[in-house]
Length: 266
Image (cartoon, rainbow, N blue to C red):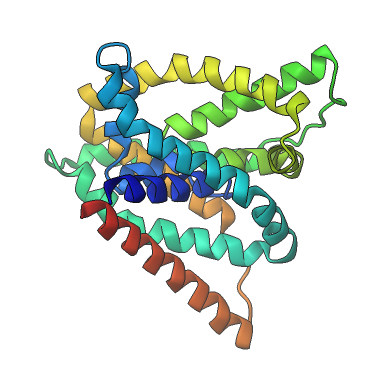
């Protein structure tokens, strides 16, 4: 049962990673898995077997979620981008109370709101990033671009609250990278994996240290990252019957988030 639950949770986190506006790290934090994952990764060299046993089903679920839903996500973003964003906003709204409770687990101080404001401002500024064009695959310059995208992906995966997909969308490369994942296009994925590995090794120690030393401010920064991402993807309001459909999709996102939280608690 626990194995199945962790595969399912990994699946949802993997889908969140490729959904614009969602952060796999923030979702993991909201359902209480973020700190255990970071500690398990850092503990692989000391106690490999128990940590690997915990991480393996999550990794399997995350990989399946990314590979299986990349094509689905590409189609959904093409035909119903606003509805995908509303579902994402519902997931964020549903997970926010649990994230606030976790942030306040060691007490609250009004100064903790400053990391929230700063983080939200920084993420909101991503909306002004210029779009860039990537050279064709196969040359050194394009490999450096894809390694850079892998580094961004590592930031979005390890720093909770930052959506890599949202950054890629603003850079104008989201569709290209999503197609590369859906078709397992190695000339793109291999340099991106190298950038991800480098960024992950660099960040994971820093992030664990921050959460260990500054628990509450770090979690309030996560809330800010999440709120800033949400502000960037709020779609324009529809009228008539579409408004009711959009409301139902938003509520469905909240319900799905609450189900995941309850599953994780059990």
